Image 1 (cartoon, one colour):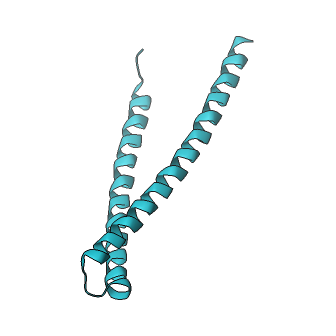
Image 2 (cartoon, rainbow, N blue to C red):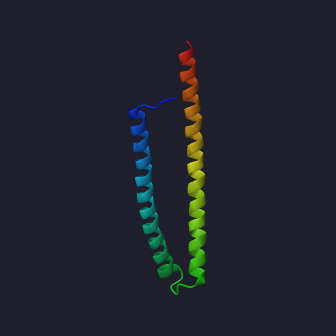
Image 3 (cartoon, rainbow, N blue to C red):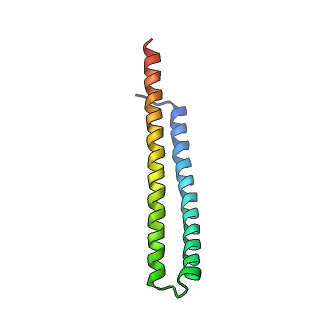
Length: 95
């Protein structure tokens, strides 16, 4: 199967878009990381002890779990919709 120049340009654009969005996501995650660490050290455990690190690790783990679970549910819904759309297109092409 030969791809056209336009298809390759679109694929390249998608790849660069994904990389740029990922970079911004990393910057945002680092900013939130600092905020949460500062908040825990200031209000929860001012001494910056092992306790504050444990609270931080548990909080981030729970947050990551909830986000991963929600994204999984969304991906499942989108995948089901995509399959349905593809089935419809296949049926329409047969007629």
